[in-house]
Image (cartoon, rainbow, N blue to C red; front, side, top):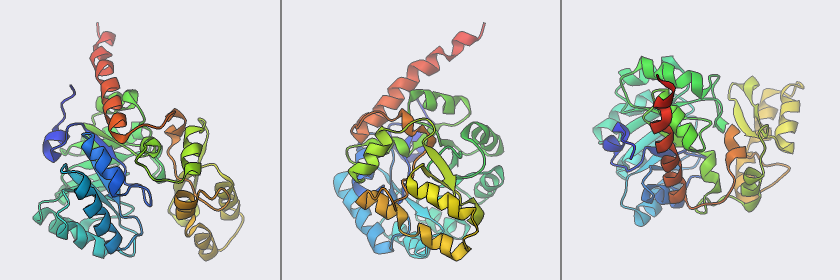
Length: 314
């Protein structure tokens, strides 16, 4: 069995986080992952605090294991959600799309483990100084908001820059990715796209079908011009958006074009107007499975790979 300090820190069985995917990662999915031994994470996204509180309650009715909440710091409701996680006694908070500095002291005082997502060494150093509990180093292979560096490049540099536990994210779908992450210096992994195939993931059937039928070159990044690059499946919407992005459409119109597109994908499966977020590993997701089986499978695959690593040393 793979031993990891992140398991001791958080009270979980396996060092596997489920990514906080906006409009997707709800209380049902988070509870299923946590019951399977990983860390299930509810995504706050752009949702109001009342929705987040409701999802936390749903998760806590279904599991007595630790759960987390991911707070997207660009959200207009970030301040309210930051208070809700304290009121609801959430065990772990992960953050993305911004700097959580102004919230960290309050969260730590409430006994919450604070694990920011970082896409650069500079942010990793800052979060370490501010008292973060661990760091998620997320490479640009991931779905949703992405940075410039790949997981292979980012993880070892973050590992060298901090004494905190590091969780690798971006481009991880099976035991090989888990093992590679450990060799890079991580002590756990976060997966998002892999959990899109979970039975407990309540995305529209069209969305799930697209993931299961994805190919190796199925994703693209849009939004760089506005400073918020996003990786999604290469759909008609994504191609049209890219065309307008580099075709001179004013910034405000470009932002409006994307408003609500993720919800249309998740809830309605809209093939024309929906933005289907996905990481580059979508082509490696082959079947629907229970979330708990996904957690166990990737760890069971990783263990013999790590044991065989010494075969290269004479």
